[in-house]
Length: 119
Image 1: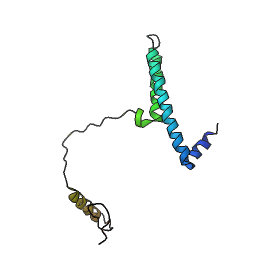
Image 2: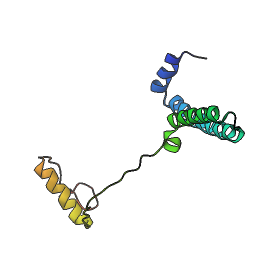
Image 3: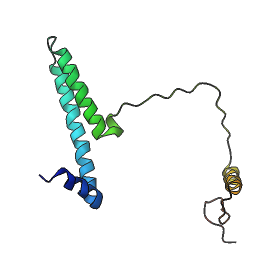
Image 4: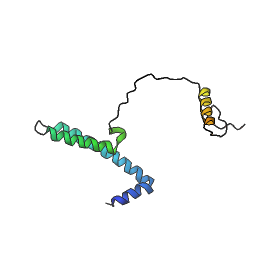
């Protein structure tokens, strides 16, 4: 097994290794999920607290290894009025160009399709 510093170096320098490493971490998160489910199912009245601790630790590790799937999601609650403005593509482009001009950002005029207007 290579040293941890070598693995970290490979992740930075070798894109294929970094991709394989990421996939391996995702797979290990799935394994942790399976272990957590087995442990929870095997819990008894005598060891329920220990089982809960073990399951929580496995869930935490899975969330760190594959947060897109296993991380807890925070709920966002918005209170108050929300104002929405429906615009056409042309109106949206005009608003963007006005903001760019206000900020002093130049550049070629844009067409509705989003490409530079050649004249």
